[in-house]
Length: 534
Image (cartoon, rainbow, N blue to C red; front, top):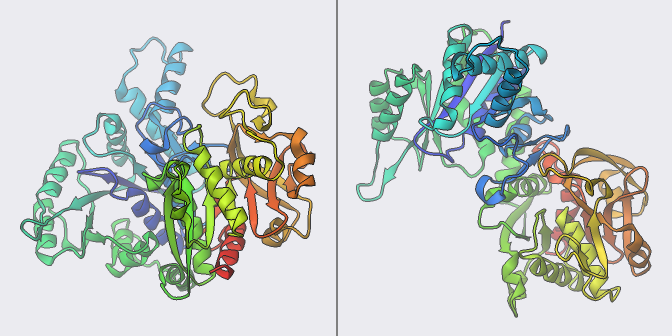
């Protein structure tokens, strides 16, 4: 079967959930047994997401192959239940960098290099090569940004040109607002956006409409009339309890059948066992039954929850598996630096400290970790959460006063956390951290780590420049901080644990590999301990 392409665009505004829509479409196609993978285009001129501030762009998602990519890749992986590669990520920086490199090498034979045709041809070549290399039936292409942005205009043009040669379906994710003043949904913004796409030479085959509540029949009829689409191709995507509910909601609207008909694939049937397995897992996550457990997530970027989306999803996956009614309490770490601020943590059953960079809010995190340790509250630290667990223990148990990380205090006498030796000669910031999947060796069969993974060698994704300073290993272990996993050569500490109570932290980011079908082992152990503490 020749490869087919589905291009997912977004109009009117950002933040509509194109990534969830693209992921849901891929999940549905996977349920039919098709081979499908995504491509995500981001128009920014960064080479990748590695140097971006979480407040501006949400979390940086890390792949096994060291790629630092858009947070939508986390959504793709969680829906597809498979690991992706950096070849799925196309950015403006990569495209323009490649074009300029070719020009400098003289590969254009004296031509004046232009956006059309050189850049648009390059994009189409990358898309088709990706499909051929992976032997795909479908490629779902998410175009970042909003229709009308300068940054993605050339990519949309490339997709228009691709549709002249290949089988391409365009899906516009739009917004149908409900004005409180009049109490009804309005179609005019979507009508205008649709005309803008037509002006670019693209007529969307489907409208997926984000709404507050169900879309009214009158609005659906109006949109169908003004866009010349059959009503069956105007699809509702209302706010839901969980993004994992969207595939079933699309199927309930016959979207899967109509989509395949548009590609002349009329006799395909969904694999019922795959659909039922997905529905069962989604039901577990969305259920409010089970024991109530309150988990505090103390971080530096709480104002934008997208900064910790993988942590949130990993907690949800584990909660579903354990039949826990999860309540996540988000706590800004700077608030915990004030006197009497630890009252914010009263009543919690567990504490999570995720990753982060920079000095701001660090002392508040250390205060939170001390509170958890002294009050026997289950603790899970991720990357920065491991580093500060070690710092807190050094200060308050080992009596190494003012112990710190050289990231936050370059002149500290007790540099419990120090920069990786391999980072000392690094000049560039982008793509130079310890990145991607690395093996860890669990050296203690009686540890929380081993009881979580049930094996000695495990692989998790990493993203850091600093590590536990080996010269302090002995004093930490002597006072009761166990190093239960290291790199295979024993040069880097990977997991540390408190000797009493449930306290575990890892230099890795296990949240990045958590799936609805297979929750992250450390999150399962942590939530189970929190459940027993409730």
